[in-house]
Amino acid sequence: MSTAFLITGATGLIGFRILLTTLAAGHKVRYTARSEDKARIISSNPAVRKLAPGDRLSSVVIPDFAAEGAFDSALEGITHVIHVGAPVPMPHYDPVAQVFEPTVKISAGLLASALKTPSVQRIVITSSIVSNVGLTPPPTAVFASTRVPLPPVPSTFDNVFEAYVMAKMVEVHNSDEFVRTQNPSFTVSHVVPGYTIGRNELVHDAAMMQTQNSSNNFMMVGMLGGELPMAIHGCFAHIDDVAETHLRVALLDPKAEGPTDFGIATEVDYATIFDHVEEAFPKAVAAGVFKRGKVPTLPTKYDSSDAKRLLGGKLKSFKEAVVDVAGQYLEQLGIEKE
Ligand SMILES: NC(=O)c1ccc[n+]([C@@H]2O[C@H](COP(=O)([O-])OP(=O)(O)OC[C@H]3O[C@@H](n4cnc5c(N)ncnc54)[C@H](OP(=O)(O)O)[C@@H]3O)[C@@H](O)[C@H]2O)c1
Image (tube, rainbow, N blue to C red; front, side, top):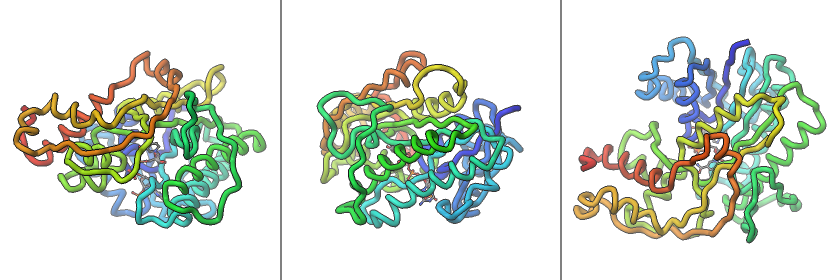
């Protein structure tokens, strides 16, 4: 049977890049969106049109991903699923209703729908390194296969980030449990990125670069003179590597020996953001377009050698990621990249 992908979360930074990578590799892709308007934005995006996918690309609107049976019809005829669609923690979100519950419920609902769909062979779920390190990173490196013992799940959280970490921890535990107890005919893997940085083809103005750019928002703080009030995990992944890893993991032979989950996170000190920008774009720095900001780093050790092997031995550098974001910002401002 030829491949047919379902991608959730294609209206966001990581999912959209996976959509482009999967289409560029010649596959048939159906993606989910929460509204017709959002689907139109995706299908009409210039980066999609450039690939001229024709009838290889289709969309399905699911207003509530967490509703019972939400994915039943979306999965018909699908062989491979890449499930990216889950919230990233925004300060104004309700920690339980908008972060914890959707993360856990959507993934469980998707797996339950897939159990009823014989065409599904493989499911890849996007997790996060916080599922392996928990709230406080341990002193030694962790792996994608590391599972933090689950504490009792509280009914409320102090903040959205705590809700996010707990949601990601519970999601991997629940998916492991699902595979152990349901014996599905498909296989399940997690791809586990660090802070994901790089070009975002969904952005179309300079303001969006800073506000609707997921994890890239933090890079913008570091290069536009802002100050982040809290430290973030010091492990990053270049978006090109993140997208490629998802596709390669999805296409792995499910019967092959080897790891199930693949972490992709390289240690970094965010104090270097501005140094990379200064080196790549000295004229824009001299003109005051970029200014040194403060993004505190929470030192985190992570071993992503499995993903590195999968990608042929090399991961893209933090410098490349920062320069890609800064370069896209200059493009949006209409300033030459010198
Ligand atoms: N960015 C990172 O640094 C990073 C690192 C590790 C893991 N991840 C994981 O990668 C995934 C995507 O992150 P991203 O950076 O691409 O974030 P993003 O740009 O904010 O995109 C999030 C995507 O998930 C969808 N989504 C969010 N809440 C939803 C809900 N309640 N119901 C249905 N769909 C929902 C969004 O749909 P709408 O457009 O409709 O809102 C969007 O398509 C998340 O699982 C995140 O935890 C991200």
